[in-house]
Length: 280
Image 1 (spheres, one colour):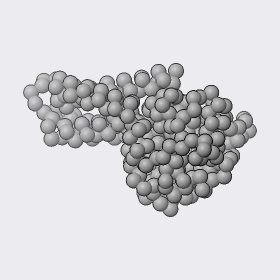
Image 2 (cartoon, helix red, strand yellow):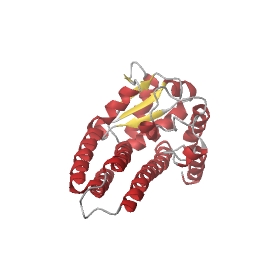
Image 3 (tube, helix red, strand yellow):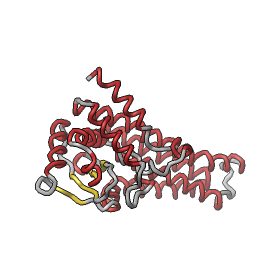
Image 4 (cartoon, rainbow, N blue to C red):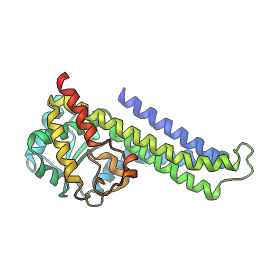
């Protein structure tokens, strides 16, 4: 079911992208948008996870080289009835973590050295359970596709500003075109933000149910949020910020950027986890 939702989102965003291309440049725009969207979806599906791991210099580890974190992932994976993902450590002192991969067999969990130094074993288990919940629901693929097409729509809008127009009678008047070029990128960003925020809440709940201890993730999130305000992960990229358990740009966000953040507030996440305690 979750895989079907992923494909449905990919198709839906692609159709919107093609439609917007048609509004800007008629049939030619639709063809170009179709080719661009197809290429982006193909790349995001097969190569995005490898690219992001390489970008953050993630180092693969096994039971011999990192027995502690590897054992936690292995134990939780068995409990979640998932194949064992690849485990990576990012050589960075800022504590954070993310999951990536297009499906169960190609999944990976990455944590920074800073996270392993800052959190105790129970808190690490809460964080890992959160990332495995993302994998179980194909969240990272959904987030990658949404981010890719949101960026493409913004690029298409900029293209339309300079090259829109022509003789196509089906095209709307210039005022409508300008309005669309302003509204569509904003709408795409809001879709990306909404998808990412809702998935974070779902992953938090999934982690609480997997471990049976919401307080482990609560404590971990609190520590990560406090530390994230001190600095930014090396080579942090806005296009991949949605993947991390805590927004890597927490230390540089102003109030306006916070409104359009891909992450819900940590306080809200902790409060929701508190509500789960009685049920669990």
